[in-house]
Image (cartoon, rainbow, N blue to C red; front, side, top):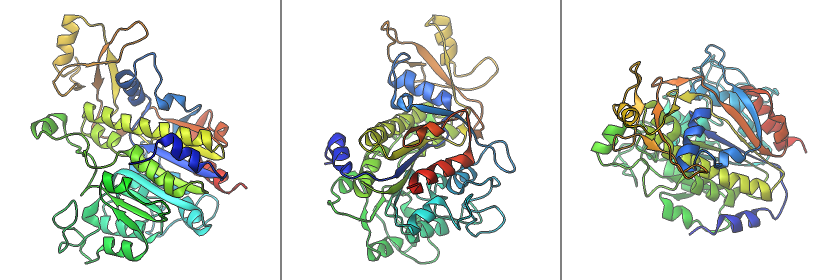
Length: 418
């Protein structure tokens, strides 16, 4: 079992180093966090996301679109440059790594690797998800899954934790989570990882048993994602949980990464992908579960920053998945019945509980639990209301409005200013 997070972070604070933790709760705008607060803590309470002190309005437009793609947004975060919405670790014109905003060849994580800074990528989704992958992979298309997976492993990143076993193995190989891989090049990347010095683990129990002193860690926790992203009705009919019970949570993966990377210097990029994928299915219970997992991870990161003040914690999404919002109302029978009907007066769908009823908030300061539904505007990613939030070293730089390209600059300043 993991030692307590408090003990872990005390051990990790033996030495001071310039570190960056970038947490990307994909698809989560301001209204998503309102919903999470209502549901998990109550309208008068605070969640960990509320405790991150410095705030700016995120400006996430692409070179060719006002709304971001996950791959375009991640490329801007990784390189500090405006790119077309099709870019995946490229400038959208070639498949080569572009020059970053400071003129370096490659992303901030490539530069960190060259400078001997320890690195980590953590994702609750598949390894091919761009929010983390674009920091080290460059491909012509977002669906070049074989290349993306190989490039991530070949990059030498110290800690890689995610799903996506299907893209590590050829069809002739049976994995821990898949009956046959999907690689057409015949490579067994798991075998290659072992040869390159990685300890490889496949579930929560194995992750928790990683021995002290481990330097390189690859965790593969699902065939695809560690969650079951589909419509709420379909999830219920198949009797599937939102998240795999055998896979570690995002918080558990982040704790494991910090055990290996600390005291640093290190650069850790963490993504909760379920907050985006469930929203793209308009699955409100799934999004709320995903946001809780992301918020637990914020709690771990904030505690680490408190113990290690030379660390920057910075977080932002790149879009608002599904244009999710909250509609609350007094608990009157006619309003409750209208909400349970599943549609707004203009026909827009409501997100309800698995039982088809409005959600109830945790009690407010007067002890009252309030009903609400989730409203949906689209199945796609919209521009939404996104915030950048930060704590720790140079976090005061996050204020006013903050372009997506500025995230790179701030992270680089912290990592290399001294």
